[in-house]
Length: 344
Ligand SMILES: *Cc1c(COP(=O)(O)O)cnc(C)c1O
Image (cartoon, rainbow, N blue to C red; front, side, top):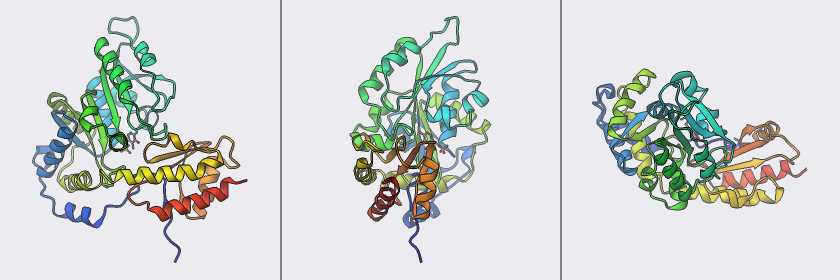
């Protein structure tokens, strides 16, 4: 029998481990719409404390967590500033506009290399004869930016600009865990810079489902209503929250292994001219196929035939992601297959 493929498409493909399933099976549960699920309540308290905020709210997806946060921060007709390649702009089906009535203006794609001065200059105050800016959204780590980390000085400058203008700051922190592990910045250090954050348990941490939105107690009370409106009020969902609690306790520090594997992969592929390994800081490896013999869909198809799965992000950009279910042998195989295919 052939080995299962090395699945480097996304860190969402992980299956819950046996120990995680045991924690899920043993979870105490209740009806979370009534606030009665002790495991959900414990997870929300734990995550709020990790980020130094008052409260958190468990959501089925990161997209819902982001959209709830944006609706908290930006009233209908208000403006959000975000990167042109941000998840909230490009991968959430236009939800900010369609569901929140939010007007979005973008800064040019820069990945995690944000120019705080440029963003600050885009802010339009209330009373300005155009749409008033109400919030700025920053992605940490940056997905299309190849898992890049926005540095603390830039975030502090954005916080200062937001405060000066009376606007709010949201962090799409689907992979903020990776930034924390890679740079050693405490989660609270990030938490104190943002009005709201969204965090994912189902990416690198390996839970099957789940994200949280984090913020003040008042905002989270309102977030609970917005979640219900979006159809995200769940019942005995402690079964899933237990997976998240297990993931935080057991799968956080091991992200360093994923980062090391991503770096090894990038270093091996660097001579092919498709990636700058020094730019690989976390668990994402973006391949720039601009000069490669294959475009992204062709590379994805050819690698899949050889037992290596990766994702086509843009016509000439492919992504490889390390995670809980990728081991050293998978990395060796990916290096072999991609080297063969990209050596024209
Ligand atoms: C995955 C991801 C999300 C949330 O995605 P869901 O699939 O809705 O859970 C949000 N932001 C970023 C940057 C992501 O990578």
